[in-house]
Image (cartoon, rainbow, N blue to C red; front, side, top):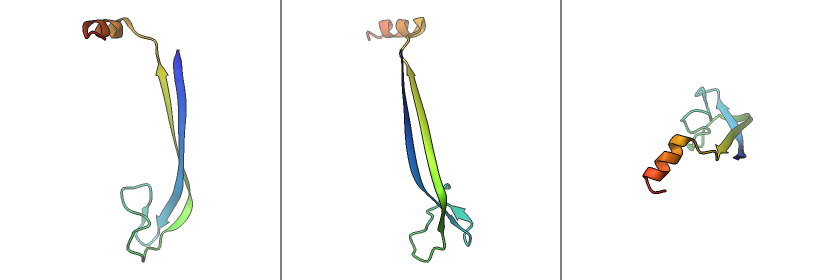
Length: 69
């Protein structure tokens, strides 16, 4: 039997034309210096789907048995 779930997270999407940086990269946009020209250009939606199949294969069953599980 499979167990499914979906996690959805949204956050503002920022872009700074002066620095040519956006909030998707590793940079801090908007920057914490206070003089940043970044503005909100949209919304980022992050979706993570998780599916767990609880059916045990023969190899997995053997591993459990060998490892006293």
